[in-house]
Amino acid sequence: MTRGRVVLLNGPSSSGKSSIGKALLPLLPDPWFLVPVDAVSGMRSTVHTRTLDEVETSEMLRRTRRGYHRVVAALASTGNDVVMDYPLTEPWRLADLLDVLDGVDVTLVDVHCSPEELARRERRRGDRPHGLAASQTRVFSHGDNDIEVDTTTRTPAACAQDIATRLPTVSTPKAFDRLRGHHARPVARQSTED
Figure 1 (tube, rainbow, N blue to C red):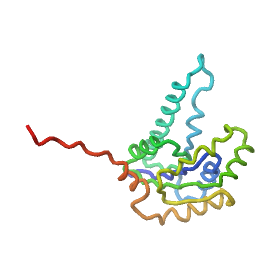
Figure 2 (spheres, one colour):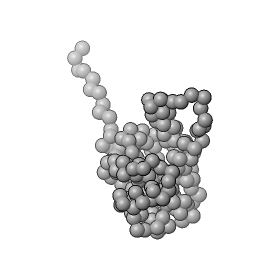
Figure 3 (tube, helix red, strand yellow):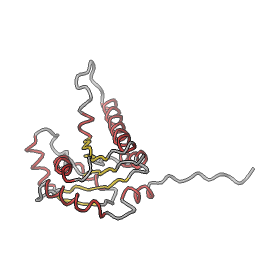
Figure 4 (tube, helix red, strand yellow):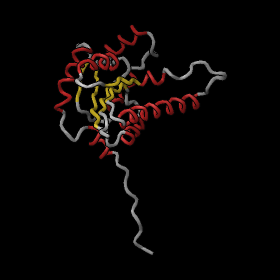
């Protein structure tokens, strides 16, 4: 069975990833799933019989994100094409994705936006902690991508059109393959002594 493709929209909160993903779907020639991490997080119960402490909350969020990675991998493994809306805010996220999406054609799209515009959007949305977007500068710390767009002054539709146009022309090896080479675990040497 042919594996599906993945387009990973990576950028800080309020950069426009979700809007780009929605605008991108009708521009792609094949059927694609838009699977934002917020959709998976939104399936989790919000009412608990007890309050989770900081460590439990952190572990629950990590499990959720690891599960999200595997949902995308499962869809791709059965031939489905997936657009991910997901910020690479923690190094382990990228490392885990490099592992679970090994063998999948992944196109990494970095979605940029000026800090001033991110702060304005965050205030307007009102559903994010103040300063969240500004705190997510590390989403680009991996230092590689296949496509970059900037939503500071461009609409999501224009960015989506740019991605759809450039997608078939992205050269290989792609960013995920290059990054996988940088993140390769060293092979333990066996002793030649008996």
